[in-house]
Image (cartoon, rainbow, N blue to C red; front, side):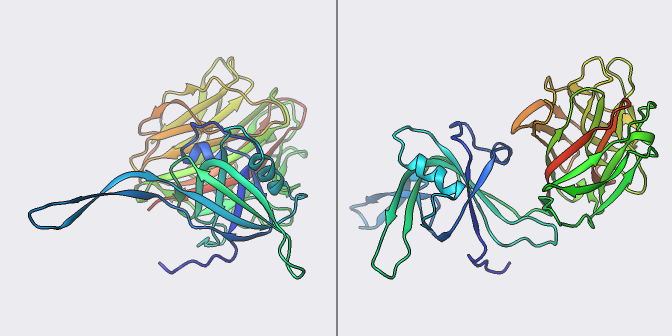
Length: 375
């Protein structure tokens, strides 16, 4: 592995104070992040242990042990700009006497794939200061801000795929499909999001009203655990269905797992798939946790949560190399781990599906899609 330069690194702060319980990758990823602009330098960070020394009389040797530890303070130097949203948050937090922790995220500039994401550091801490630095006549006015770290510092490996769907971006990494209805549309990038638009035919089936994107690259679980996450909103939470997860094919329009339209039963169209299902034709129209392993359906689980119209939710699935899936909504684990949710030797493709169950077209917006396999 080569050394990584600082050039291109980016700093983010959570949009609001976060609970002192936020410690895991899924919890940090679920936060809303605001970039801090005009960073001139990042200070050093990392854990330091206090030395505990003992000197034996017999041999005179100084024995050294590790005592308590301190995850330290991080000092940032910025080109001061209070019109910058991230700096405004740091200034407000740094001048407040409250004990509120904020999330800090640092992205390096080391994505190793075309659509990959960088190594990322997450931490939680107190913004201890935001102080102006004037200098002399030929100096830029700067701000010095220090964050006192109150959590473990998580380093997350680069992702295989991290698409923020910036307007003007490409969908070359996806296979795109749509139903037969004239209103159904192939997914496109619009307003910095992936937009899926359904048909509006009375049939209300996926074959007619569906819109689907499938990642072109597949993943085999036996190669290592898989993390899959997307930030999704639906324009409505009635007469609509969706799926987000992985499936075993990428060559045709197919909703991997969908509601039967009777009670709380499901139809599994894929041989192997695991993911979230939301379908308002069900008796209990919450977000459900589903899986199918070699044509054997897993027991579906009701998350107890539902989409709110035009409101983003972060959906995340962590699947182990043995095929056990753990589901998260907005950083919080839901349901119980689904053991052997799908086969470990089958190629699985991340997919997003939308369908209208009525004569009204609907839209699903995807703010980002994140995929990482730790091999």
